[in-house]
Image (cartoon, rainbow, N blue to C red; front, side, top):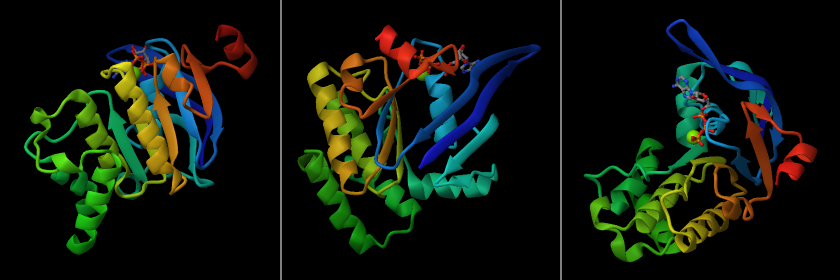
Length: 228
Ligand SMILES: Nc1ncnc2c1ncn2[C@@H]1O[C@H](COP(=O)(O)OP(=O)(O)OP(=O)(O)O)[C@@H](O)[C@H]1O
Ligand SMILES: [Mg+2]
């Protein structure tokens, strides 16, 4: 579903060039839930931003369903809208919108007619246990509740790929567990692929496979087994 070939990334700050990823080669299959692990600064967010087509300034190749991704910003925006969903550490809900409106937003961007929107939104709010909070603004919700809304928003348009950067880092372990299980359950019916950056070992246990980064390089399976 997602393949990296010889992926490298340099950040340029003034005269200084910092290599954040070095020759990453990986193949992620449709429906896999991947935990992207590694210490702070190892390149997890950098790789996620590239997978999420938020950063097009990299070297090497990215394949989406076997097709090499061109870096045309218009095409990438369309892919992001239709095929990708995002969950972030700090929830990133729009504060002036209700829970319902936050979840509705991706459907509006994808021009889903209003009669279909309502049914789909209420169904997913129910699935994340937030149907009673549809009209609440984010500041009235706990961190765990906000993250459940963010999960609903990431999955409402049935994306092929969900990118999550430390989605459970602000949550207690019980809530974190619930949030991952919800992502898994909702994603299952559409064979959604997940790439989840995490520091949290408990969280990687819920995933199908770990990709371990160190200094911008993927550790080989044998080495990462030793480190674990
Ligand atoms: N915008 C930027 N400009 C310059 N250097 C950056 C930038 N973003 C990240 N870096 C550098 O790239 C490397 C990888 O950073 P990245 O944020 O991908 O790590 P991370 O694994 O997500 O870390 P954390 O676990 O702390 O979130 C680090 O050395 C970091 O300092
Ligand atoms: Mg990060």
